[in-house]
Length: 205
Image (cartoon, rainbow, N blue to C red; front, side, top):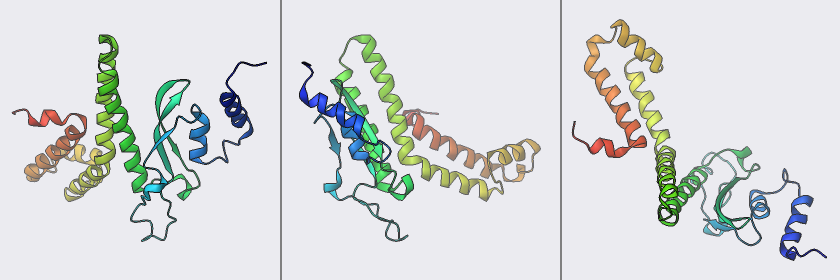
């Protein structure tokens, strides 16, 4: 007789029987993780819906088809995200993006609080990973706005993209608007530093 826990054997049987293609995002997460270990962040009971779906006559769902949370995988703490392919064809909504950003933040805080106190080598890697996650978090929150602003600055200079702006700077065709060019390039640089390392913006010079 197998000494394997009954709950684990039942879960293994469920994994073999289920169609992962047809399973919902929540079902996939529960089957993927250790039994009863999943803790969902902002579940459907919170009734969070992207505010613009109704305006565009798009289907609504209380979690935007995005499941995020933490649990155990073979006894190890993990953070997970799963997307509901049937919601808007797998497209992103506002709550969807916010939940992914929140997941990044949760992982970063876990690294900073639960891993940073480990032995020096592991603590160093935890700090590096936490910094990378902070960049990803800022990118998720700011990238769309930065892209719109950058495109508007290019359009104001009569350029379709960065390549055209570089060409215009090289051939001198924007020399009569050099102050505008400098302001546009500076603004783009500030946007990039805001994502990569906002601490640099506080340094003099």
